[in-house]
Image 1: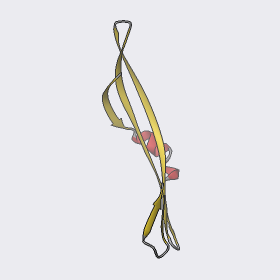
Image 2: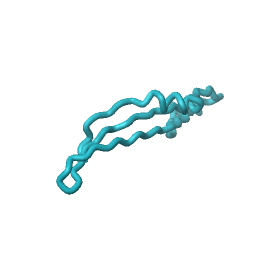
Image 3: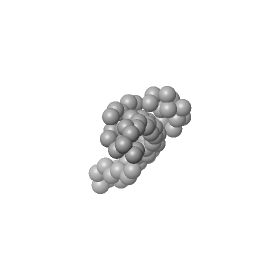
Length: 75
């Protein structure tokens, strides 16, 4: 398989936008955000050049805390 192209999928990000948040907390913050994209790929099937596409959405989550020992993060 060869990756031919990548593009952001803003339509998918908009569908999941309800997960985008940044919440201040007493000792730090909590943050979630969405990223989405699609790859176009090529492969050979019994001597024929074929094309395919795969789209994916990911929801990331980050918690940062500062309990007096510096900033600590957890993904």
